[in-house]
Length: 228
Image (cartoon, rainbow, N blue to C red):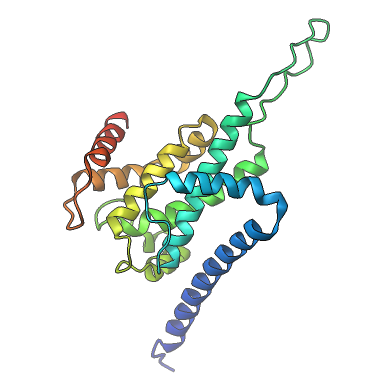
């Protein structure tokens, strides 16, 4: 019996709805933790501090961008926390009588499990914050990578503010900021250098109808491409 494709179409719509509902649920759960859990108080204060300094639109009617923005803020919180831990670290001097004892591990070192968690988060940020906004011919099309990528490409609302160029610029800049920490930078560049480089090339060379970049943004982009 020939199929009219309605079944597969309905399944695709269901996947779209599930993804959007999951992103909304996670954002709601995060804010709930910030408001009700005392153990999250310090993180909330740091998140709010970084959010106040951030020069990008953090909320949107498009939940994919709201989720990406909040995740970028949390990655910046992680970077700042690791910097502060390392700055306050005073390792005990090694005992020459026991040279076989390993030196104390810096508190900003990530365990294998923590690295996997961060890598999972980075995959989400790149998939939601960079790949959907790459133009045809720039990088590998998201819908051809994985089934999840195809769903993401379909649910991203390009008509909602901020515009695609602003989202791409924000994601690239925030990730490069996070990458200034050596441990985090190795995780970012080992797995996502190609997509970030594609995003920077598009921002630097592809024409856009969006609002022109400010001199500060233009200077940052030129420096980033030169360093790359």
